[in-house]
Length: 159
Picture 1 (cartoon, helix red, strand yellow):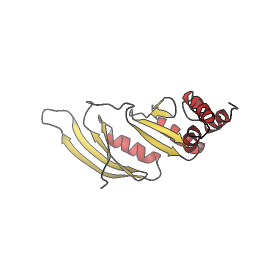
Picture 2 (cartoon, one colour; picture 1 turned 60 degrees about the vertical axis):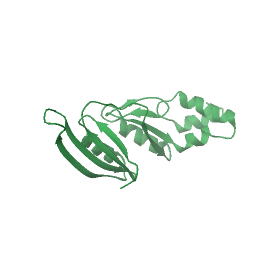
Picture 3 (tube, one colour; picture 1 turned 45 degrees about the vertical axis):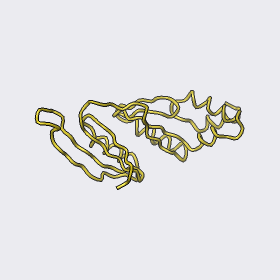
Picture 4 (cartoon, helix red, strand yellow; picture 1 turned 90 degrees about the vertical axis):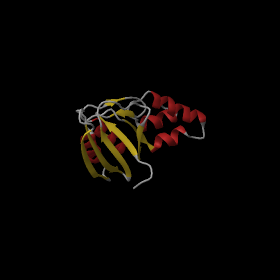
């Protein structure tokens, strides 16, 4: 078992979410599902855990009722090689009711925040030329999904 694992609290959608996430990523699988039944005799909340792997990272999803919800304080960062990967993950993670945010962020249909980031963004925003990096950052700030060609054009002073 990995030493540190991301734990995601859901109301009742842990298994559904894990199945969705493992359908999005190629290197993914459901590892284990445990259904524990009711939290307490007088409770309507059933507890279930689902362990799943995404790209070599283990996650644990928990059904334990609507006590907590996700917010942007925690997000999952997806490193994308190019625009094609950005487009793929952006569209897949928005399926079924997700919401676009800005600067490459989105919330999926379960409310979990994701950052869909092309490697070129990091390269441009850390450029040794501060003016070039600044133009890339300014361009990114106006985007929802990151557009690599528009970033490059902005960094080069053509955007």
